[in-house]
Image 1 (cartoon, rainbow over the protein chains, first blue to last red):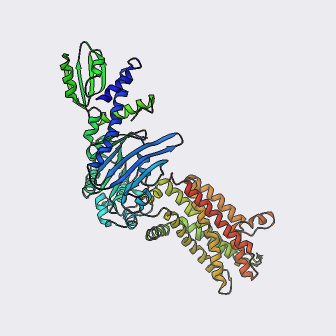
Image 2: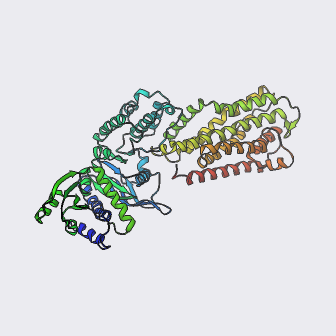
Image 3: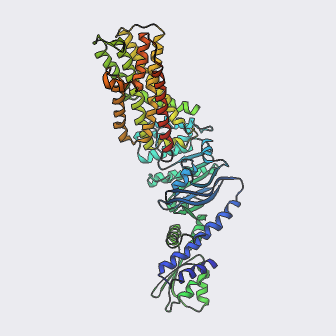
Length: 353
Length: 242
């Protein structure tokens, strides 16, 4: 509650800027609060040591901050989506986790070890966007080869079946379609008995049907007790498959919670109504308000608690007409969180947190 | 180590299906030897031309095999992300390069064995028994060091640039090394510094029965050092872009 008032003060000080400005500053506070407050609380609710930890990890390329002070913790058995727009730092984060790149600063641990030894211990299976395959061999030969590299392998036939590639196991790797290649790469990620599976945009080259099959087989992997971390920019995928979502933008962790919580943090309901005499300062002080848009007599409020917002309006003696309350999907929540971050970044980089 | 061997085996199996490799390493030197080996009666490097040409062709086949196949493959596999994929497996980080070198050590052998047999039975090169293994190992060492150079090129250049780069190196070391014909005069002086010349000259000196100058052996080891440093730098500096 107080954070919304603070942010209103900030936006009001430049003489009551445009509606976009209100929008910009208010939600940034929510997102930052969500990241800071929530990340601390989540880990404690599950037992066991963390599978993965990022401690203030940054990766800079010259002046570009691909990843900027990221801290997070993954616990055993979680299915976690790393959600962010292109260029948010998803792939760089995963690359660092998998020892393909070194952080500029900060520390990453995997199973309590450094990433390189974590990967080499065979306790992680990974599939990245850019992973290629050895040409000139059959699918089965390739899966057999990579299986042999694992200290704790799955039977080859099991892997072929799970990845749904048995039908073309005797075809040459360099003669497969994009979707088939993707499934072979998935097979390579699950051919050892790994505790952690890391997937970077796993369904990017898949059609709708293949995508469905993929997530079905993925659920079996998770049901077996594995921890899953996947990057995606498909919100639907994060919403349906993950039990925890990390929203990142510009290399920073903006929010961390269940899909329902992420939606709530960004103001999960939209309240709209008509009101003849609009009193903007009053509206901006409403409980639960995340964002306010006023156009003539039409008021749109994005609220984290639409009931409280509405009651406060009524209690103040207003009688709005044509009241509508609609739920916002994860998509709007995500857009709100990242857009606010972008806007905040433009006007002050020191304000977040 | 088991993983490295598994990968090496898979690589060797791939190589067996590669016609290009056999044309470069075996067919070229065999055809050239059949065409020229017995036609020249003069001496070269103090030994019969048939003996010199046997050694230079064995070196030629082995060195082009070590250079051509690997550079192109490494570059292609880097571009396509296979190297990256391997880095996600429990296979140690250096295993990929180790495998490529191991495969090179093996792939240069057929060219050397076949050309030496050709020299013995077609070119009528008669040598004391102990000289054959000495020659074979010398030629093998002098040509396989190019596997390290191939690693450097493969990591450093994209596939479309590997072809011209290896071709230039291939011609320089084949011609200046006196592999196709013995050089004399200025080019001959410059050529003395190439590892290809050094491998051939050590072998012909052995056949001729004269003392092998230490400079030749030192030269070969120095080239190995240079190529190994180039390879190491190339692999390290591209570690984050693989």
